[in-house]
Amino acid sequence: MFSFFKKSKANDGGGDNSAAPSALPITTDSANPAPPERGGWLQRLRKGLARTGQGLASVFTGARVDAELYEALESALLMADAGVSATTHLMKQLQLAVKSQGITEARQVQALLEDLLCELLLPLEKPLTLGQAHPSVIMVTGVNGAGKTTSIGKLTRHLSQSGASVLLAAADTFRAAAREQLEVWADRSRVDIISQAGADPAAVAFDAVTAGKARGKDVVIVDTAGRLPTQTHLMEELKKIKRVVQKADPSAPHEVLLVIDGNTGQNALAQVQAFDQALGLTGLIVTKLDGTAKGGVLAAIALWSRERQRTDGATVPVYFIGVGESLEDLQTFSAREFSQAVLGSAAADARAVG
Image (tube, rainbow, N blue to C red):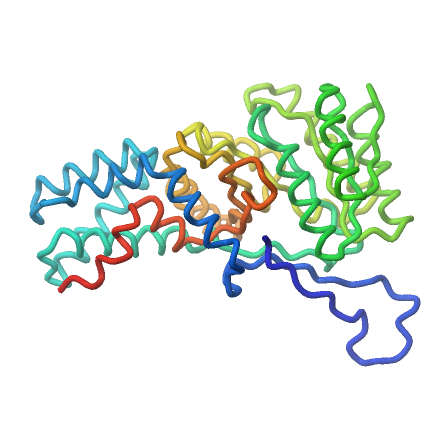
């Protein structure tokens, strides 16, 4: 489960708060002590990334620290969808560290690579904090099949269980199944939903934000139609939705999240770049890390995010990752946990060598 906390008082100075909105903030934080069920989830994450973990771990088995090891490792990282830039970055840092530390054991190199990958991914590890605006408006997008609507449903369930009042906007009006799916999640979580078949998506989003303000909701989540970033006219519609939301609330949307399928490899990076250019992303949800995904693309995204921070002053964090269909399968992202899963569980024990 997410570590949602805390509902703060609207006025720390005391006095009558009856006229003030119910400030949250609600925060998701992977750094909090892990609840018991997270241990089982970590096993599912390692199982989901087992193909990558086993492939990378096998490179170090019985190997010597030489040029052959580095060549095999470079190939394994590329096969894991890390991409050329991230692979080059990691290999350069790894060889410099091995030389400076005088490392001679392959398993120590494995542990060192885990540390370097964790260091690269760490800026992506950031809690999602809601409540600074009232309501906090979250716009969610992604291509069809990425698990966008399901992720919204899981996030809604966790938010409502944490005590937040949520309003959903079914702005994916082109696909009836999307509205019906979101209505099912709204019913499960007992939250309100704004939905209208065939309506203009921007109009639905506008009505939802307006209703959220009128009803005193904590969070409004806008589900938008799935589309490919190459579909220019549909991307323009996403921009329109964002503009119309800002008419209802000039400070909104407070979060713009992209849901990406962990199986899409380097195409996931292309999606992130395209949607960020169109909308200005504030966070990611990575889904379907449950057996066929390689996981290395997060290294490529982290390297891109680092460059984005240099130019725009902000990273695009990974708020959540998913390994399955159940509610508990969507969890906060931890750079260390992910690095261990990608490198194989044996990497966690390699520090004991030497």
